[in-house]
Length: 457
Image 1 (cartoon, rainbow, N blue to C red):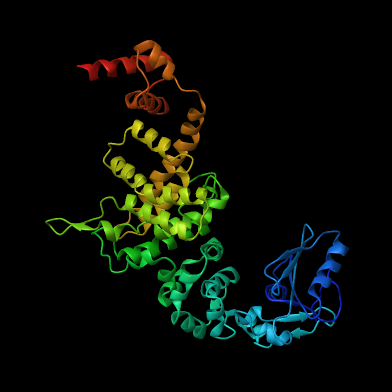
Image 2 (spheres, rainbow, N blue to C red):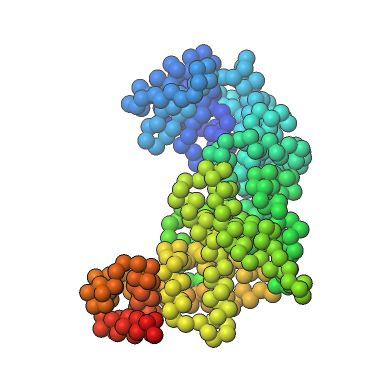
């Protein structure tokens, strides 16, 4: 017997807990969401729950397919009518066996027509029937999401059924795809399941641009084609987040580097699509050298389209596009650093252009570097650690202080008027201030005067 103890649940015949609620209880996962299938009068059951909780019922869905929701503050109850002639028929309409179990509220009898308890014990996500994917193609993606969240495996016949119909995912609304996709990526070790999605054809059906990376050979710095490199970057990123190695900060774990904790899953999404511009930008020189000039800019526009299809919010879209567009910037700095040509103003300019997302950009770049053939991952990690220290301890405090001069100074001291030159001068002064090369207003004005005299010759 299973102890049922949701506070407001009526113990009456014809009321069944179903789906994920039963699954989670059986594996010891905490839940505050109760899905109820009811014979007879679901509206009446919902009203009794609402009355006991002192809340009201919210009706969702179309007539004949209504869900009655009650939110108590700590618990959510979704009440609906049984679909089909009885509870067994209802359960066999569901997606996966571990979600096709019911629990009679009054008797605590478990109804398990699809052998979900066996698959729970074996940690398998198995389809109830192949037609489950045709009834709702989102289940193609949900299979992998559930395996990721529960740390289960997708059963082999279920994988085969997915591989026979991956293109059906294209007909699913972007909002629904986004919800499942981000839940999958939010798990700490999703790369293996991304590989399985690729092998089934679902990954490329979901993001067709990734298919162009397969067979896209790269230059001598890479051990694999663009697709395998991308997957290696995702794997290294997850490893860096999970194991904090190499650590990029002395006082914060890698998974806490980002400006907003909710952005962690978006960094993974950006890692998966960071190189999608490569195939369309690929060129070869007269010596056979392969180049991808501008792939970060082209890839950023492609990323914007992918995010649009998945109905990302404007803020999430801009964040991902920023990471894709700027993922090479840290590498350019590192090359200058290795050549002893990196200037303090260049670092300040980098911080100005990338704040507040500098830490996560360096995190992505470190994973990108680790995914290359001739990886100097440890050297780059040391460099990134140095940059992050400078960013946190020098750039951010300095950026909070007021500028040395303003536009009014340019007008009053030099007779300038607002123009592209006007803005450029102020930016140059700020770069030098943040680099520590200008310390006061007099030095800033002298720098401007010297530059104006030089440009007028």
